[in-house]
Amino acid sequence: SGSKFNLDVNNIRINCPSDISCDQMTINAQNGRNLYMECNEPQSCIGTYIQCPRRNCDISCIGDKSCSDMTILNEDGYDGNNPSCDTASATSCSNTNIQCGSDLSSQCQMEYDATTSTWDCNGNC
Image (cartoon, rainbow, N blue to C red; front, side, top):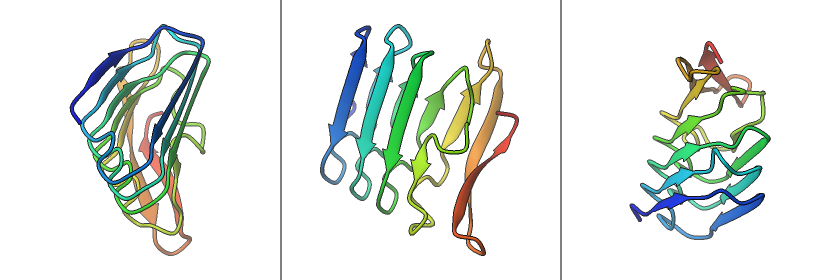
């Protein structure tokens, strides 16, 4: 945990298979092409900082607090499914922020709607 990676390859796959396996990690993939990250256990990617590539940035968050306190820098913003937050968990993406826009000056925060069991990013991304 707490590791820093600068990645500039075409297809980046990161699997975080257990509790706190990728917590506090920094991933700079803005010079890559595709980032696929699986945070599919409780707290597996808590507090992670991700700088997404322009092309494709897929982050899967399954389990309680799997992606909570995460910061995602993605020029393209939130597309309704990235990160893909666990609808069965009100904490899978809690306190997760996305910074977007060409200068990353806009932002939104992931919020869970318990009435509809859905996640959305509230703000300007």
